Image (cartoon, rainbow over all chains, first blue to last red; front, top):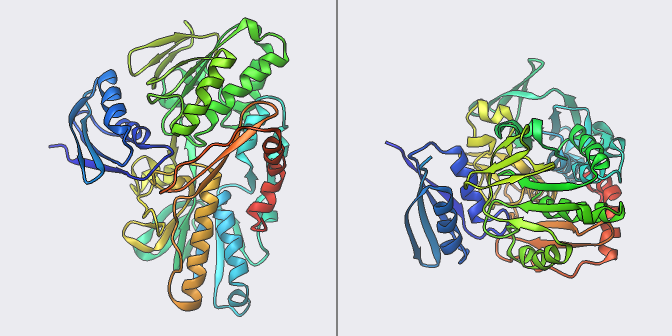
Length: 76
Length: 377
């Protein structure tokens, strides 16, 4: 069973949440699930857009008290 | 107290010099000892590599002897660490020496790993090493017409470099009178042309004005040097005549080998800058896993916080400040103009209009850097 790793990219402007997610996705194994924490409103749109284009799997995306929790499974 | 600093780059050097001044009396009476271990006897001003790639600086201008940058009270050894024994508060070096410490600062930096993208070393140019920057300049000199593709690996040091090199390429070909024969295509990993939203907003009309094509959501997967095609993870491709890459980076091998952090990035508290699980181990600069730019600037501001806290711990037994995520980056916007971005964890960068004065300030800083790492600026 693959464990879920959380990437805390709250309050970061550079390299930014999506760039952080891409970094950790490269290091992850196929089947791993990563949870990205982001305070950037743009993450609700740009993370799913990238996940869809590259071919990973978006598990969920929700805003909890101002923090986006986006869960992504590495598919390839 | 024995303070051991591992790494003689920007962060390590500033911590060492700052501490040596703050603790001058404690060192004099023998209460404190500062030791630095580094892999090299030379210190490189890495931002200068971009200028080398365009023939605007010579490689020898980028170096100083590391010993010449350090306060005389700092004990310096060219002897990289091969083993961190954190639970025993000691390290073992390449020469087999053991150094015990009470406080450890890890500032080992990062390394480029272009080999992780198949074909990139054979098919692309990069300016992230001295040899690469010189080779890129020679390739640019020979270039007469065709498509120049810029691609960006993740993660990478100096996040502003992708747009800087693109503007520099435009101006370089304009100056040579062949811009109309050169098609510049910029590729970027996320959904806009720069990760900082305000930089992306400002750069977009500049790209359009300069006739620079761009493709976003492009993460380099592979390069075919024979066909001269670069492929993305996202399933697209670009044919090129000259490929310029910001290579992906990793932390240093010793960090990875000892499983101190995935990718060579050590888990670090974003405010105290201590390593997770070790209150007496500080981590600064590229070595951290913080969601902060991998730049000399971040290393500089982190180093000041760490030095202040180690010194206050010696003097009053407690740290006195926290890192707020501060970063200051110059942004060269061509051959004779520049601007800057300053931000921290709470405040996004607000970009000012580029001007010549900021470019000259940056040009001056290329020299003033040596004053900065000595802790005088």
